[in-house]
Length: 521
Image 1 (cartoon, helix red, strand yellow):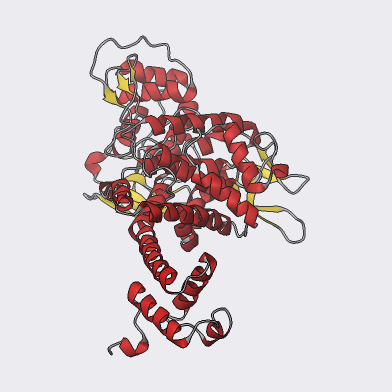
Image 2 (spheres, helix red, strand yellow; image 1 turned 135 degrees about the vertical axis):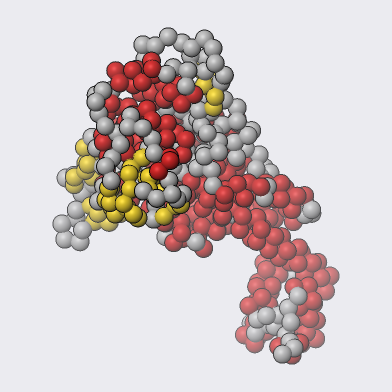
C-alpha cells in the first residue's frame, strides 16, 4: 500500500472517453484510475494541463500545472475536497479499496489538518467503523461540507472527536448532495415563497378558495397524465383530496402505503414496500427479455433506504436554513429513484414535492404549487432529468433476466441510490416552480377574478345555473368573445339577440378581448 502511486502519467483517455487534451488525472479521477473504481460519472472530472489554464471543457475542469497534487492518497483526496466537493459514493469506494490500515496511517500523520479530519470523520460515518485513533482535544471546528461548493445544513451537530461540524444534509443511510451553482443561487435570491405568499395575500378569500380547489384538481389530473393515464372521476377526486392535505401528515412507511392505495386502489397495494425486484423500461418483442431504462433499488435494501430517506427528510424539514426547494428535490427524486412500490411511484414522487414545500413553510396550507402541470408541458426535459440519474448507473448494476421476465440483481447496489448528486433535479424543480409562480398562478388568479365579474353580471342580467355560466364562458373563450351559431341555436337558444349582444360585449370588456374589427393593423 505504501508505495502505491496515485498520480497518473500523461493520459489522453480515461475509462474509454477521450480527454479534451493530454494531461494528468487529479483528485477523484486519479483515485478511480489507480484503484480501478467504477462509479456514476460526475458532472465534471479534474485534470492538470501541461499549460497554464483554468477552464471547464467537455466535462473536465482543467487546471494549471501549479495545482498538481503530490503523488499520495492524501494529496489527491485533499485536492478533491478543495476543488470537487464531496462525492460520498466514490469516497466510500476509495475507503473500501485502500483499507482501514492505510486510512489510519493517513490520519495519524496529520490528525490536526482540517482536510484529514474530514477524511477521518467520513471514513467512520460512511463505513460505521471506528478508527483506533484517540479523540482530538483541541483545534477549531470546521464544516464538513464546503458550502462554497455544495449546500450543507445550517444547523448541524459538532463532532468533538474530529473537531468537525457535520453539516452533511442527510444520514449515512441516505444522503444526496447538491452542488452550489450560479443558477440555484439566482433562484434562491428570487424568494419565490415570499412572492407566492404576497400574491395570494392580495387575492379575495373567495377567489383564493377557488384557486386552491382548481390547482389541487389540476395537480391530480396532470400527475396521472404524466404517466400516460387518465384517472376515473373517483380516482381524481380522491387524489385531489389527498394532495390538498399534503404535508399535514408526517411521512412514514404506513403513510406512503396509504397514499399508494389511494393512487392505485386498495386491492393493488400490499401492506408495505414491494417484495420483488423492479425496473422501468420495455420487454424484447419476441423473447420478453427486459430492456431496462432504470433499475430500481433491490427490494432487500428498501427498508434501510426508505428509513434513511424519511430520516433525512425530517432533518431537512427542521433545518430552517436549508432551502425548501432543494429539500423537496432530495426527498421527491430520491424516492422515485428508489422506487419502493410496484406502481404509483411517479405520482407519489410528485406528491412529496408538495409535502416538503408545505412542511418547510414554502406555500400556505391547502395551496398547491402546480408543479405537475409545468412538468407535463416539459415532459422531455423531465425525462432527461430522470435519465441523468438512471442511465449512468445501468452499467454498474449486474443483472440478468429472471424467469418471470423481471430483472435478477446480482450484488450490492444500495449505495447507488443512497449517495448521488441531485443538482440537475434541483435545478429542474426550481425552473418548474418559477414558471408556476411567475406565470401559471397569476394567470389563473386573473381568470378567476374576471370569471367572478362575469358571473356577477350574468346573475343580475340573465340568471342561470353555475353549470350554464361555466359553459357560456367556455364557449365565449373559444369564440374569442363571440358565441357560435351552434351554441346560439342549442344550449342558449332561449336568449334574445339583444341579450346575446350584451353578454358578448360585456365578456369582451371584462376579459379584454378585441374583435377583428377592433384590431388596428
